[in-house]
Length: 96
Ligand SMILES: [Zn+2]
Image 1: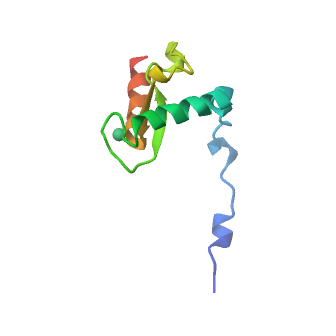
Image 2 (image 1 turned 180 degrees about the vertical axis):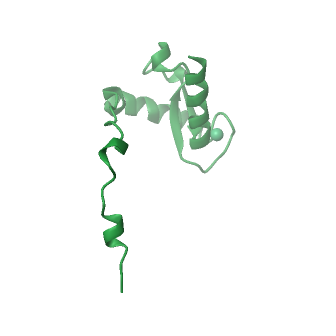
């Protein structure tokens, strides 16, 4: 009996390997975690864009940090569900 082990074990050619993802230090900081927790708590379990409940929420900077938004100001935060968070990111990048 053959297994898929050998076929899946081959490594992708290096030209297909994406460059290492550089994570902004900011996101690992306790100040960021406290900000995100406060933003999500304030939302009361609802996505602040589409109103969905029962979904995982992400704290989003209304004015993105790249656009000069305040990092730890709860008023610059919005709790968004995954799909709203992704589409907001696309819109912000497109607008830049
Ligand atoms: Zn949403």
